[in-house]
Image (cartoon, rainbow, N blue to C red; front, side):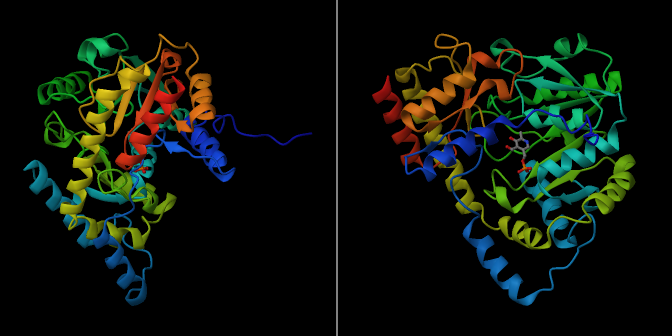
Length: 380
Ligand SMILES: Cc1ncc(COP(=O)(O)O)c(C=O)c1O
């Protein structure tokens, strides 16, 4: 008789990783591939990081750190809040984590019990839903569309009450849209009134083109903020991020971190601290993303993607492809096979309506984006 396997582990795949696997296989077969699927900068870590890591490897022990991270890195993160947001976040409330992904695990376990109801925005980052599901917490889908710029409103949330939590992201993945400061303010007020724990995924802060970034911790002292060195800092594989934790959850997050992860990787903590001194290089990357975005907005209509969400930030364009398909998964597979251009099907982000959308990532070098468009034009 087969041994029992847990139902909690039966969560859907993170589809973009499946697309990446297919694209990488194509590359191994010797074919050209243009990565417009994966949400990762085409560049490695900034140069200053590489230097700092080299000397740490030869001169430091690099053992376990405090569960919440190296004091100097936590100080640097606190300074980042003063410099970037003009807001004071005490060092004691900052925890360094193994990417924002570990931040979700820690915050969901610290804030919610089995059976609690947590609102997730659709379309949205699929792993919120899947991690909640694995933990026995109920993801409550809040359906958004182009009319509300794919962001939640208090009116939409009213329809799914009661809630224990709400996860937001501005800029959002996959839509790239952002909340205005007053929109974030009204969501925060709604959470206060309805006793909802706000979790703000601020991983795309630093990459915005049209709207002002506001950190949720400056508006709501009960909010958990999740951030990462993966995107703006171009350090996806280093698996390093941070959280801002409300005082009443500090002890439980610390115990969870000690028991689940011990601490974030020490070498990546050294790297992350150095990344705060690489702003010139990183701002050049943001300028490049902006140029890629402008190029795509101008050229996507030519290749049939003429209904796109307003790309305020991050490095994504979310396109409505209902004129071409009602099966975005097959649509993306066909495009990959015919042109080598890898795109992510919308159903990864939106189980209800994603069959008629695709996400286009423009984090790669400009020549890759231009070649991808040329490929799509040729196959049109
Ligand atoms: C919105 C969002 N949050 C979190 C993550 C996970 O990032 P990390 O590398 O920090 O674990 C991603 C990765 O694509 C993302 O898009």
